[in-house]
Image (cartoon, rainbow, N blue to C red; front, side, top):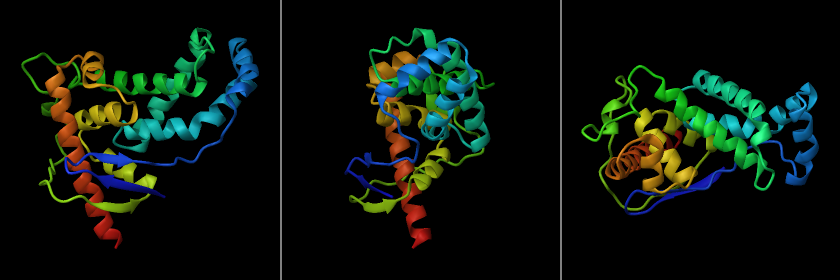
Length: 214
């Protein structure tokens, strides 16, 4: 369980502990060597070690578990196909995470709406899920309540793809609006607008979930 609070601007301060198998960074060397040789056992071990954490990442970028599994599978294929590029100077987990995030974004770039490939004249929020209602909340006083990681993921999956993607990149990947704009091919103002709307929507969704649980 984790505590989630919102500032006056509706900014969520999320502290979520995800379940997953742990391993010391220094223990990865032998596994990486085996993966470089294309050995199945080290590949399976890497998959087992990071499945839970990376599944959580993929779930945050998608609207359902099936989409997340597809992205996770593609991501691991990329991990094993490009593992020779890992220079071992940084975090192995962080490197895998970046691949999963990029795979998730590439997935939505290939969708029919291509909502992330926008010109300057259109706003990214115009390309959300057509069957999802915009549930923007009015600004209110600060709220503090307990939420489970599953509740956070469930709420995020109800955001439109545009809101969800910008929110993830800003809050969880800690990118600046300039970095997000460059990554998605949008302008900085669009990134800021989508983040603000994502935070308001998420605040309302989590508040509604809390009322239901109570």
